[in-house]
Picture 1 (cartoon, rainbow over the protein chains, first blue to last red):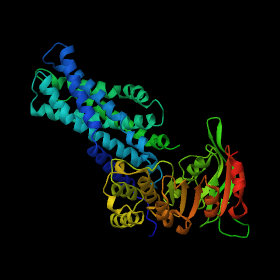
Picture 2: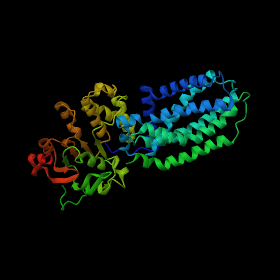
Picture 3: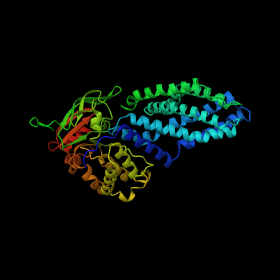
Picture 4: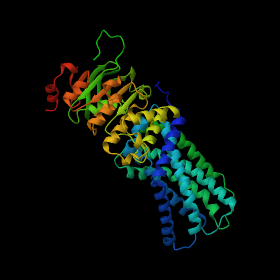
Length: 233
Length: 237
């Protein structure tokens, strides 16, 4: 057999992403935990707030606190199979650009977040949300969700790559991820609040989505620059 | 061991190699050279630095001081050029339990740049060689330890590496299985090999050069034919 040439970054990232999704499909743990957690949190909010419905700022706060905490579960499990079964070393032994792992892991986390929201957001609308948003509002909310998801996926991957190298992994994940995700949660909650208001067919104001876009860009570049150092010895 | 008359550079060379974990030196001033196609067998008690030496050569750990090169490439500065040319078999099989043997090998094949056709053919050939062709679609979780080790051997040689770094490669293998993997990772594979062993007689028989490590330091380096099992036994006392 002649020596194969190393794969491109994109080919390696696709290989890792396909493996991640196959593992989750084969033994669903992360998504199920995230979805169950979200459903339970809505029930807790329902009783804790003593309200049948919420709207506006409160609705936005409930939605984003729930999604952020559920995302933490996904971040905490992002490298579990690699840590327990040596998959990270298997990747590091291959002649591939290390950023392929960043792209693949962030892609996997983004997929999990989108899948979670396909369940958690309609559930939120049914269980807690007062006004029923129109189709235009749903589309704007979708844009906010996607912008926030990209930021959470990038930062979550960075944090998970740091945490997996330490003994107190679960602790490190929460301690690092929550402060780093604070700007996303604030911007996403502010951008979503008018959309979830009682007469909420508002246009999406530019400021908070721009903050989310800027966050995605800055942390995307930071992750690209740092990731090699995080996974190498 | 290389001799001065040989012109080609050694396949594996270290000079004053040191690797520390915090204050503790896992490898301390290890200097050796091994020519292409030959086998270095590494002896030493637990914690002597055998696995650390393999991990440095595999580019998984950076040297703290000194140099190490594989196939003429420095592992610290040119790790990317080394990785595709080595096969590493450590204590962990580096396989996902929820994937089948074929899926695991196909994943590693993609990471090493094998085309789908080449990968399918190579995987079938390797699974047949280690007697796992009928269990190739079973999840690895369902495998015995010996089967996992055989599959790990397949993973290590999947991309036909020039150099093999093998940490007690026959652990968990019964005699028949050890015979099955021999053409892939044994002396008859014709590859340059670094093999750790706790078996003086067996190790000396398969090695060209013997290295003895004690507490990270190089206690012995000589042609395997000149070393006795008693000398190896001394390392463990």
